[in-house]
Image (cartoon, rainbow, N blue to C red; front, side, top):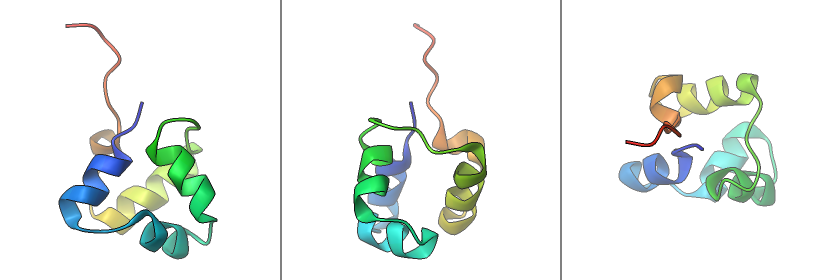
Length: 65
């Protein structure tokens, strides 16, 4: 699971903005944000750089508490 959608919202940025910066379609980014698909590791690094966060900040633990 990833937290891309949450971080975009916190920063006041849109999925369209991220798609443009990544050179990807909005549909691809929407699928990442809804956790239908997960980005490649390289893409996670690109997203983290664009959002000014560390890669682990984009990820959500799947461990049960």
